[in-house]
Image (tube, rainbow, N blue to C red):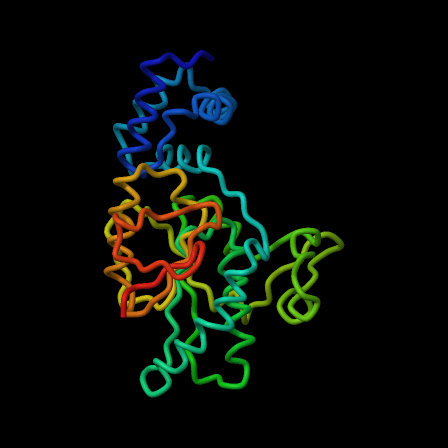
Length: 270
């Protein structure tokens, strides 16, 4: 199945305009991921498929398109220094700030993929607030892909996937379901609220976040898309709130109100 220039540009335009993801230099990725899917589903051409997607952007095939094209590479303990900083610096600040208020910790994992990031955040929260159950430590976890969200909700991982975790966490937060797979215990799973969300949309979530993890996703966005996204997030964060981005990412300091704290850590101005 040959991908013509016209079909390629239609797919690139659709994905960029709807999701902010720039695939203009990813022709090989598009053909590598879409061709087998289209053949398996009985499509005769890329044109037939993208026409169907364009006609029904909220339909099943439009969801399948983003599920097939997006990369969801993540793992437990990825960029561990962020979680260490969360534990040592950010959570004490939140505790002091909210101690005499609602005792509500508001953290958003904005590109949660298959769940390793939000579950790790929740384990850090559980350790920090283990002696005080008055705190609401639910984490909001969103992703554009419904496929990875289903995986995340199940909380099922291979033994090799949870291997990097501390032994205490593995014993406390995971239960073996067979010789190869482990599942996050129900008490931890219920603390994560998973939602499908397109980062190009207006943020609908109530309240202001103390912390937003936006790691390893802006690399796919153009500068103007990044600027608009950061502005929306900034406006939905509590004063002094922290933003974590990927350690290989950076933010143009002239294009955002976030204040640089350290590499890949930014803060809303107090």
